[in-house]
Length: 101
Image: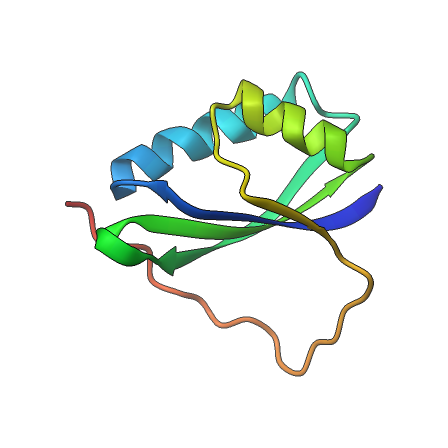
């Protein structure tokens, strides 16, 4: 599998909407896309108008599998960027989840 960064810039209006979307995505990854798409992690971004965006790291057979996964999970998919390498200076520190509205 190859590694990709997916940008969903203003995909979600609230934390509950994001949680529902994440649940749909995870369910599809575990079942229908198990051999083609693997969700590694997501970073939440504060976007204009109070919306929540994400920068997601996925592994997949190809970008078409990611687009199909996004379509079936009803997720935005602004950009899919192939990752060509990795540099880690320090391990990630826990980030507090967004407060529910």
